[in-house]
Image 1 (tube, rainbow over the protein chains, first blue to last red):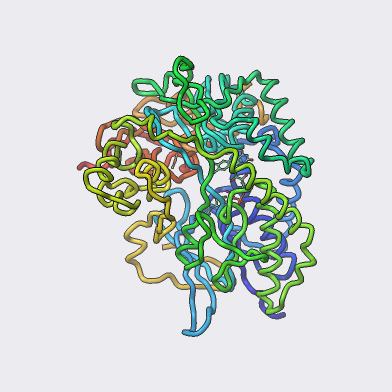
Image 2: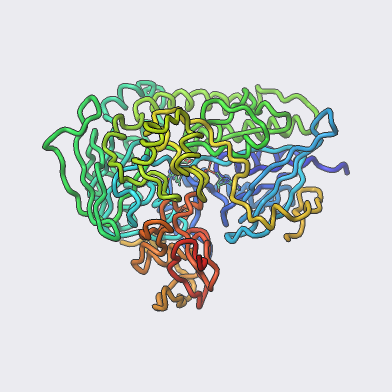
Length: 478
Length: 99
Ligand SMILES: Cc1cc2nc3c(=O)[nH]c(=O)nc-3n(C[C@H](O)[C@H](O)[C@H](O)COP(=O)(O)OP(=O)(O)OC[C@H]3O[C@@H](n4cnc5c(N)ncnc54)[C@H](O)[C@@H]3O)c2cc1C
Ligand code: FES
C-alpha cells in the first residue's frame, strides 16, 4: 500500500470538519488540529463531555447538520483516516522547501490550556480553517466585570453551561446578537433589551436578495418568534453610551441614534443589568496565513475558486477567508477538502463535482455582503469616548493617550500609535483593541502582522527543533 | 430555567475548589471561569496599572483578560483551564509575580 498524503486541517469548526470529511473520503490522511477540547468550533461548540448534557441540541441551531458532521468524523477516526489533536494551539506553520519548491509543512502547536510545551506535526498540505474572533469597539465602562463579548457569553453557555449573571442586555450590531439574546434567555437569563445600532428597515432593504434565500427567511422568522416568546424588547437604532458600576456592572445607559449616528437628546435611558453581552461583528483569524506568506484580501485570507491561497500547498476555508456564517463555512470547507485531496495526489480536481457547494457559496457570499453593509459599525462612536475610556484592555491605554499620540505627537498609522502608547502590545497581541485604536486615530485597520499566532513561552522558542514524525503523528512534547 | 436543566445535564459528582480561601462548588468538565461564574464570581484579577477588577471578556482564550492564579501558577486563562478537585484559585494581582 502506498503511503497516504497527509493534510493538516487547522480548526475543527464547520469549515474544518467539512474539509476533513471531504479529504478523508478521498484517501488523504487528515490531521485535524484544534485548540478546543471537543470538535465543533464556535457554531457547534459542545458542552464539556463530563457535564453529561443529554440534550445539547437545546443550545443549538441546525443540529441535524452537526449530527452528520460528527458521525462522519467518528467513522473516519475509527478507521484511522483522521487523527484529531484536540487542545492543540497552533502558533506557527513552517513551510519547507528544497530551495526550489515546497516539500512540506511543519505545524507547531502548544499543548493544553497551560500552553507551555510544543509539539510538531509534519504534513504535505495545510488547510487553514481557523474561523474568526469578535470585534468590540470601546465605550466608557467597557472593562467592568460583567461586560463580556456577545460570542463569549454564547461560548461560555454552550461549552460550560454557565451564565455570567441573571439580567442581561445584548448590544452592538450584527446577526450574531440574535442567537446570543435568544440563547441567554432560553438558558434562564432575563434579557431586558437587544440594543442594535443598525436600522432593521435598512437590513431588510439591503437583503432584498433574501427573497431568493428561503432558508435565510425562515431563519430570520425563527428569531423573530423566539425574541417574542422570551419577550425580549428590540431597541433598533439605539446604542450603549456607557456601562456603569463600581467594581462590576450595575447598569447601562442607552440612547436612540439619529440618521447621522448621533445620540438623540432626551432619549437616554438607564437599564439595570449585571451582564452586558456586546459585539460589533467578527474579524477573521489570519495570523497563520500571514506567517506562511499568504496574500490577504482586506482583513481576510485571499483564496481562488478552489479555496487555494496563493501559497502552493495551503488552502483556506470558512471565516478566515471572510465572515459569512456556518453555512458558508461548510460549503467552503467541502470545496477546499476536495481540492486538496486531488492536488495532494497530483491530479487536477473537477469543479463540476462540487457544483452544488459552489452554488451555495456564491449565494451565501452575496447574502452576507449585503448584510454586512446594513450592519456596518455605528458611526461617530469615537465621539462618545471620554479621554479616560480604556481602549487597550491589556496595557490599560486610554482614548486620551491615543488622541495625544495622534494630535500632539503626529502619529499617522496604527504601528506608530502602538509604539507611542503601547496599545496592542499586551497579551492579546492587539486583537481586542486594534479596531478601537484605528477608529480613534482615524487610520486604516491594517492586519496585525503577528509573527506568532499565540504568545509562546521563551523556553519553547529557545529549545532545539522538535524531532518530526510522519504521518501526522505529533512528536512527544517537550 | 438554568443552563444545566436546559441541556438536561447529568454531571458527575460536584467537588470543592477554593477561591481566595473560600470554598465553592464546581462541576466536572467546567472551566475555572464557568465554575466561578456559577458561584456568582465575575472578577478574579486586578490590573497592573490601575488595579481594576477583571474577569471573562472574550470567553474563547483570545483576550487574556481572565488571567488567574491556580495552585500557585499565575497567568492561566480561566476560560480554558478546567477546574479540578481541591484547586486553590486565587485572584491574580498584576502579573501575579512579586514585582
Ligand atoms: C465567540 C464566538 C461565538 C459564536 N457563536 C455563534 C453562534 O452562537 N451562532 C452563530 O450563528 N454564529 C456564531 N459565531 C459565528 C461563527 O464564527 C460561525 O457561525 C462559524 O462557527 C464559523 O465557522 P468556521 O469553521 O469558519 O470557524 P469556527 O467555528 O470559528 O472554527 C474555528 C476553529 O479553529 C480553532 N482555531 C483557531 N485558531 C487556532 C489555532 N491557532 N490553533 C488551533 N486551533 C485554532 C478554533 O478553536 C475553532 O475551533 C460565533 C463566533 C465567535 C467568535
Ligand atoms: S476570557 Fe478572553 S482569554 Fe479568557
